[in-house]
Amino acid sequence: MRKRVPWEVIPALAVGIGLGLLYAWMIAPVRYLNTFPNTLRPDFKDQYRILIAASYSATHDLVRAKSRLGLLGDADPVQALTALAQRLLASGQPFEVVQQVAMLADDLKSGVAHIPPTATAASIVSAEGPSATPPAPPAGTEAPPASTTESPTLEAVTTVVPITITPRPTPTATATEGAPFLLLSDDKVCNPNLTDGLLQISVIDSRHHQMPGIEIIITWDGGEEHFFTGFKPEIANGYADYIMQSGLSYSVRIAASGTPVPDLTAPICTDSSGQAYTGGLHLTFQQP
Amino acid sequence: MPRWLFSLIALAVGIGLGLFYGWEINPVQFVDTTPASMRADYRADYVLMIAEAYHADQNMDSAIRRLALLGSAPPADIAAQALQTGQSLGYSADDVALLQELRRALQAYQPAPTPVGTAPGGGPP
Image 1: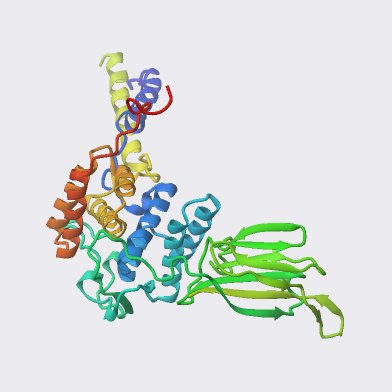
Image 2 (image 1 turned 135 degrees about the horizontal axis):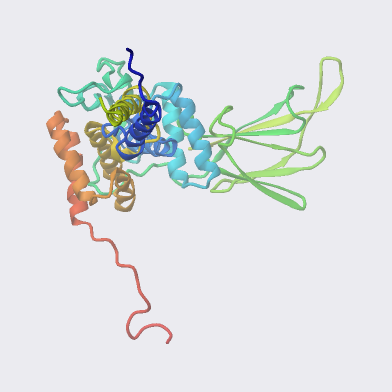
């Protein structure tokens, strides 16, 4: 005769599973203690990127910065940095922080370390060498993902590094700090595909690197407006634009320093069919 | 076999199945981790970045703020731990020197006292 399994088995099993899940998920969940940077919360990843940029700004070690960014698992580290610079700018973070992030993005894009010019003597050195190699992973443990294991035989990046004569803690001062911006070019732009009266402004430093976070003041008869470079990183980090009204005369200057560029008006252009339309201007400022 | 024993066995099996599912098949996913939970070598590199930035700007407040993300231990202890890890991993002499500089600076750091009220004899009553 076959014995029947008591009906209480089913609810007991269900209660048991429930208790097991409660213990496994709530009371003693799997603990991740040795996590990787790519699992960090997004805001901590941003902090990580800012720190990489700050470190890069101090060492100009592009290979190491690239390796560190690789740990975050971004599909496009340049895009991630550019977007971060934009967010920092929009949230009013210090210009120095924004500049460090944007500079790293620019240098990653160009593949060349950007060393700010200094008042001290300079020598040509190579970034290749032991110091360019990221710290090794701990022995006996799994290697860090992706590019920390990048080959130390990466292309040599020839950079200009200042000879440090002044003892620390004096921070490295850049010669361009506070130098007035000069108008490098003032071009008429006749492109019917662009918005009528578009005033495009590019701000670069002495090495032609884009400068985000630069405040620009535009004035006209009875009005004034302030805007900043860096809000359109998809165009360039040092780019800003403004729509000019036809018939008005404007004066533009960089807020920090620089002489105003007066008498700017939207030019009249003609398209291929001879039709007149309002063109634009492109000003390029450079900090020498 | 008594009926209650069936139930007890079923309960035990259920708990076992629950644990197996919760720990092995579908464990809690930690995707939003903090820098404090990173593996020791990543933590050491994180501190090294702070040391590199500190070496250039000598901004202790900024260094301490950044170290705070690595846990609630005193910043000097975090730097000392990173130094130890760095040495065991064979960091270059330059990197070790940077970590030592940061640790020394943190040990010597005295935060400025927050002014409370006015100085004796000074200011309006």
